[in-house]
Length: 95
Image (cartoon, rainbow, N blue to C red; front, side, top):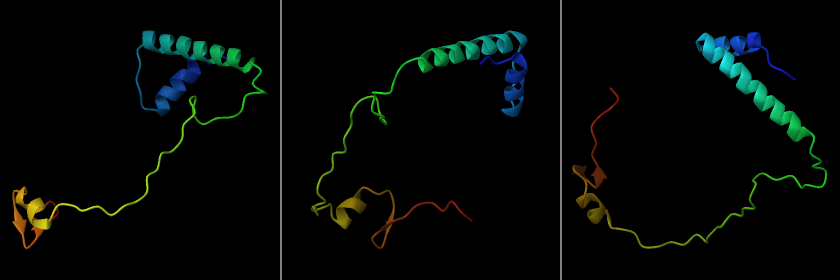
């Protein structure tokens, strides 16, 4: 498969991108190089390769949920620039 310059122009127009003549030529060449490489990869026999989501095996590491003591309300609010009746007070952002 080969991409024509006209197809690159069409995609650029859809993406609302403007390219110079030199850029258009370079992108056409680069995209065709990528497609040639993909064709080369298609030649590989991957029948014995198990499908994966990641190139490297991964596993989730979960820990048990535990209730731990946390900072008191007074201590937490002591660092706040402005507090009111046990809450953080922040500037109004929506009218």
